[in-house]
Length: 479
Ligand code: BG6
Image (cartoon, rainbow, N blue to C red):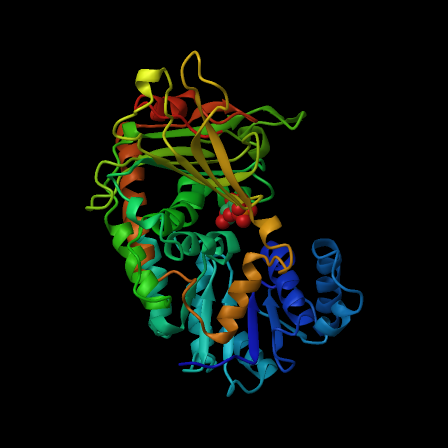
């Protein structure tokens, strides 16, 4: 049902995500008049705040995480906030919450980011308090389970009271402008699509490298690891956008139908085609950083790095490896996609001593967005000793191309879509389940073969086995 909610209910309103992302995003939307003046935001969590003390809490978060906001914007924004303390295991607390929220006739959007164990009691509490009717939609933040089975349990609990068109599963990578731009690059330009297949592409690389380590998330991260934290969701969504067939329309059903076909075409990966690592002490940007076990305070076999050689069993991508890698404590923060084209079928320059290097498209997603296509060009000269060719980049920096429009963070887009009811950038249940099916099989392979992570020095590109994963196919990571 199409409606713009005039109530936004934030579970986990005092958490890290709320402080760093949700409150700053909402404040920025408020300042740009992108949310209606009547939208009330009700925060809830266990902490014992009232409206005033929560507003003070929110002000501190905004001062810290949104330092450049216009003076005065924060005061206006704080006026929208209310707070109700709630223990999700206490059904009567939801009744009090419902009183605080008031009428939801215009529609309510819920943003749920709580511990997985609280999902079911929260849904049940909302239902009993009459907060799940047809004009309520729910956004679900990860982690939504740790396996196919546990994600199905959560999805079953949610879908018992919310229809799929009112469930908004969040993968914040889809909210990134740069990720959405993949669709524009592929489907608003004529020159890529005819080449976008196994006949012309030799391999694809997707890298999500981070310099951060465990941060303050030991409890969650050590139980998850890089495969479930980054590959199951963000990496596979990037892969789906790169590999999918052209959808007929830009709408939630058409795009998600195409993505899920890709996710279902993922071939089960043998353990030998994966590499796992865990960072040991090292240095990043010249500063010493401790190893994972030291940060954690005890020994652990959780992987903080994973590299995978994936394949899609369909016509378009038969035989094309998709090399995926993600890790913490890498030398730099970078998310990028590399499309390595095949060499020309016959080089007319070979007899004149020149070597043609195959074209490569590098799509930089973050920190900077840029698109770089390497083309072969002739080195100027009279060619008395033969012809020389060299790759030259055709380089587009998005910041320069679009200096005007304001850059928005992912959660601004996603919160606005949740409030207004636009599902295209949210993940459908069948996608999530295809993602988990593939991930569970990898983990089962690791368990069967007793595969444990190899140590790598913080500030390096992971274990040397990750380099071998591509080199033995004659490919190299784009570092
Ligand atoms: C989150 C992961 O989903 O994404 C984190 O849980 C990771 O471990 C983060 O650091 C990366 O997001 P971004 O937007 O900084 O690339």
